[in-house]
Image 1 (tube, rainbow, N blue to C red):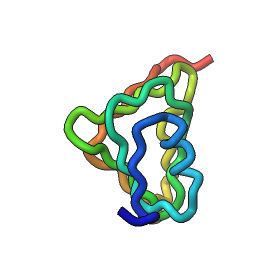
Image 2 (tube, helix red, strand yellow):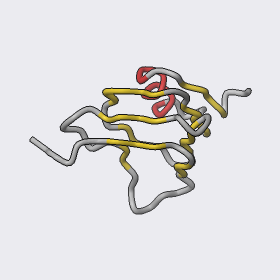
Image 3 (cartoon, rainbow, N blue to C red):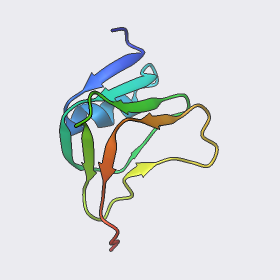
Amino acid sequence: MNHQEQSVATVDALVAATKDAGVQHIVASGFLTNAPSIRLSSGQSLRGDGGESRIAFAAGTDGLQLSSALSGRRVTTIRTTGSMERP
């Protein structure tokens, strides 16, 4: 694995990877809970490592944020959950 691909198994590691310009591919494993809103940078992708990979976002957050100008952003093979209620 090179710096362009980063495996994450904690919410803190996920957040750090999204903020690291050197990370192009984020591979999440396990069940990450109570995640804050995250935004993929231009050219970043997020995928699950296996069929059980999942990110549950904290209540009151926007979850996974993608702009209309995706610029190479990609999300594949991962389940995300969040709350529909906003404060």
